[in-house]
Length: 365
Image (cartoon, rainbow, N blue to C red):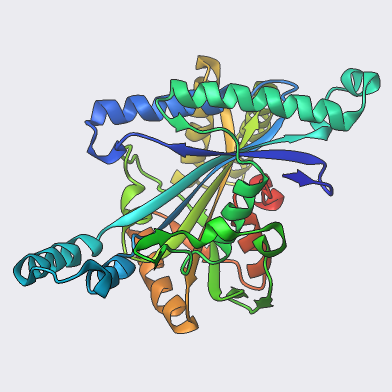
């Protein structure tokens, strides 16, 4: 994906992994450490990677078409006892069955190319080579982290990805002549993008689906287990996508920022003491957090700027409002505070797509 405004190139890689939730705690921590090592390799001086992201589309598996096929004439005369037992099994399974489609996107920016390199060749060619090198490193890092990574999506794959995020509620297999045919396979370049768009204060309607986007204003403040996000991604039986952007910060920039913030906090503490005001717990906690981050930086753990976006999709506006309460409650239960992007739903929805359109203002904050 080429962004001609920001002069960036983005590659999208489909990723699958082991059954993380059922692994022992020690194995979960090892897998999570492998993902951290993957991100850390891009936090270097003069790196061309501007940001990475992972995006997961979670939606109910949807066995309605399969149940309809069971009762069709194409199957002949079924055994009533076996059919009733199988339907009971499906009713139990579909109540909690969630399908996940996860991709990882990596973006390189022309402004990060060194002046020496741009002086010797065409910037677009150099940016393309930088993307190829970065994607190869990404694939090696994903496999080292025990994640199964496919080749980057080709134009047809990108078109199907965009269409699945535009209408995730209706993009399900449908039976045709006894077989399940995926409608997304028929997507073409002329129909991949939005065909109609209507923006409201708290939602956006794209083609036949309503979407509402939040940004994660507050993450968990206390220590959480490795699988802490699983109830939010898989619970509620609603269709939602979550996209998290990571912006690598070089060690030099991190060190300067820590020193600047420490000097400011120390100056504020001195001023308060001179005026006879007490230094509250919030001030002490902020100072200790900076000192801890400085120790982590010295130990070799790089810094990452990050921002999270959550998009809920529904067929009707009433369903969107009802499912929004479920999503917000699940977020609160998992220590997150979601904030609706009022009057920016179109921008938020576009930024939540796994296409490298990182929200620069959120990352900067």
